[in-house]
Length: 260
Image (cartoon, rainbow, N blue to C red; front, side):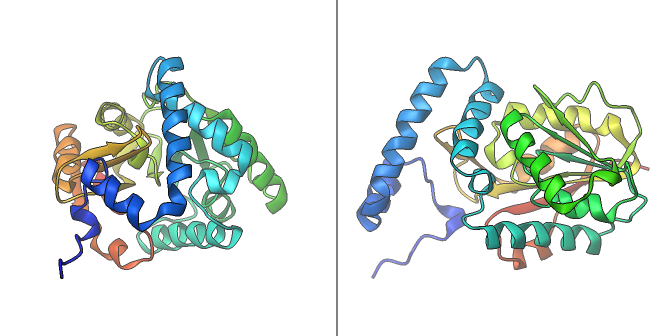
């Protein structure tokens, strides 16, 4: 019997993988074909990847805001947010930190950060106006308006409107997993300016140990060394967070730190 290919060695863009997956999951063929048709439509109508993925988020949020950020159920939405929060607190987040969350979405983890941090210390950005409106609803449900969080729509990850040397913690969960390398490079080229010396930036990504690839311009798979080398090019020290791998989440995590 042929040994199954480990998840980090799979090339989900290859025809062989697609045919095998379709044979094993015939119930998912219709959904994949629908996503493929949507992909073609958005590619034609979008000027760049941000516009493309904003259209994806508009489509997904209209169906279910929690599923749009990768949560199959409300219970899973709560658990993933709690997991992110617990991990960051365990790894150094303090109430007096000023935190920037890139891709804050509908505040799956953000509402916990807002509740924990001192008033005014949370700043969330996202490319999707639809998911930001859903985030406002989360804020209202949790009764956290008096914590004065910021939530801002952006068109890129240049962060030009934010002050220099301001944030001690930057966080991006399931953002680079949906980003081509040019978008990641843009973020890493600019995030250092807004970080205080010694501040860190935690981000998750879909990890592969084989060929780097993407599926429908929605899901991107990178080798760890590709992203650590890119971070180091922009002056950061970078390390793979091994203990994150022990948690029940399919993505991996890297922390990059601005020299102090």
